[in-house]
Amino acid sequence: MYCPFCRNPDSRVVDSRMADDGSAIRRRRQCPECGRRFTTVETTSLSVIKRSGVGEPFSRIKIINGVRKACQGRPVTEDDLAMLAQEVEENIRSSGAAEIDAHEVGLAILGPLQKLDEVAYLRFASVYQAFESLEDFESAISLLRHEAETAAAENAAKVAKGMSSEKSSL
Image 1 (cartoon, rainbow, N blue to C red):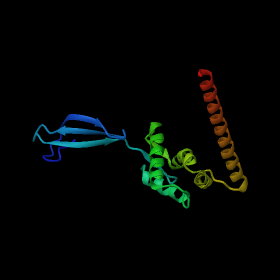
Image 2 (cartoon, helix red, strand yellow):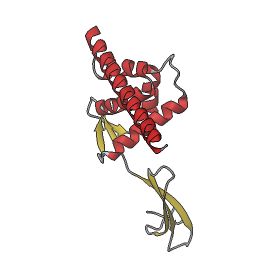
Image 3 (cartoon, rainbow, N blue to C red):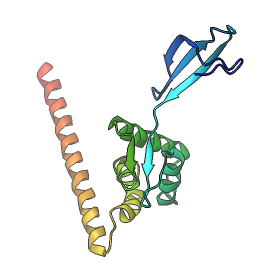
C-alpha cells in the first residue's frame, strides 16, 4: 500500500474496523516515512459472468433496475427495492464464490422478490425461468397458492398451539 502523501511503498496498520454492514474492513494506516495517517477500505470482489463470457463487477443498482421493471404499477417502494438488492447480494456473497453467472443472479432474486410482491415475482420469473406458455404461468401460480396455503396452515397451527398452552397455564 503506497502512502498517498509521499508514495512510500510501506505502511503500518494502526486500527482495523468492520464497516457498518459487515461488507468491508476499514483500516487506519500510518506511513513510517512521513508519519502521516490515511484510511483504506477493503472489500471482497464479486464478479458477474455475462452470457457473452465477459465478467463485470456485481452491482446492486443493476438488481434494482431489473426488479423495478417487474414492480411497475405495484405497491413497492425504492426502499423495498434497496433492501431486496442488499438481501440478494448478501445471499450471493455468503456462497463464498468470487464469480457468479448472471443467470444465477436472476434466480437468486426470485426468493426475496416472491416475499416482496407475488405479481412482480411472476413477471420476473417469466423471464428468468423462460416461461413459454400459459401452462408455465398456471404452474407458477399453483405453486404460489400451495405455498400460501401451507404457510397459512402452519400459522394457524402455531396460533392454536399458543392458545392451548395459554389455557393450560390458567
